[in-house]
Image 1 (tube, rainbow, N blue to C red):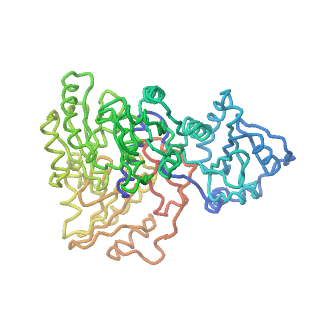
Image 2: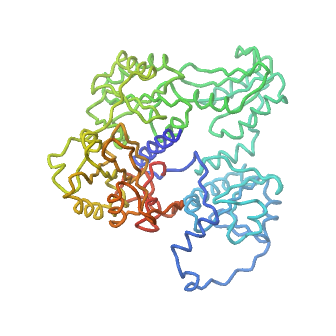
Image 3: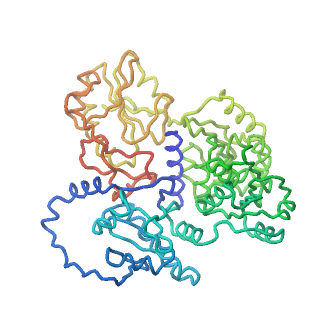
Length: 570
């Protein structure tokens, strides 16, 4: 499961970088705890409290001020804001929180748009509370991380609703409007149902003979959570008849592919929210999905983890004809595999590089198992319906042979003190039973890797005369090995002679500790590692020279090995 998450986020990051936008963490709640982030702030700014004079505090009254259309709340005006706004979304934030800073302009944009809409202005507003100052409010609403967003409805401060939408301006607006609206309107006639279904690309309609049943209530709850899809309910026999629905069920109507998909309730008449959510996500995707920043999130959150990537050039008619032929294969493997088309004419070069594909290779295909990370391929220019069907079947059966990327072996790979490994020579060098091989797996753009480079060179020079010790490095953005899974940069692994178990190096990255580790036969000296878990520094910027795939963690100490660029960060 972790591998699936890593691959999903890595690929999503590649796509978003190619589109020149910053990635949004919408799949997981990104929060910083007060305790951890306060510690980081203290460490990064020693003595700041002594050197900085606090500005005079402004007297707090019941008046409500605004910053960029966002109401600024505190203990004295909080109750007034609740009483004057039917739907009030409040962000509890900390000024030093990186995620809060990323959200700030998006939150303000949403606030401004809602304020300008006449139908929304009177009912829906956005506000914020500095939870590091307003401790009483933070305690009352059990704020444990930042940012935390809560919706207060009709002035009720006892049971606020936790925000579950996307952290984008449109995501916030959609979520607020869904909460303020009917959620799932009632379709009481065939005409109203037809008008509603025809007005949207995708609609989900719950057919229930009793709109107050438990199943109907579960359906309505889900309608409040999935805000990017339109929901409705009906108990009208006329509507049941028009859409040939004979029993309580859910139907997803769509203006593509088969036109509809039906979801049956259990034999007991119960509706499982998790199963229905999966059904909606999977059936909202096209049979062959164009890869874009809009579709990426749906692709990578799908319950289907086998993905077939069809790589074509849309400006070539023969490629489009091949794509049409592949629709038959997509139907055959529906439910087992997602089919995604990548157009080489789009700005997706980094995604192509990830799979080791060039524009000239089109038409071709790459299959990936998101659970294992294994990739499979069809040769350049060899994509046909038959070749795709065979590869898909082999992958499903588990008989397909995975491929691993590799650069060509440099002519001088073994000339320097640090040996250069690529996919093609990795096993022959790293797994040599007569050698102890210490390998750095790095990314050229990674700042922590760059900091390690001179130390690694010194280590290579120090052990250059040792026949049984090899210091090596491999660019893991361009090379892969079947026996190694890399999850962050730099990753250091020790491959002992005699085929013994590989050792993951977790010690300090200084010459002395690295040397002692080697001298001890791959065992860390006492005091050579830091076992503490270090929190990410959310204020770190992306490496300017990098691919923009990930954020690098805070470099609290050049010697702490947890300071690495992780593949599962954006």
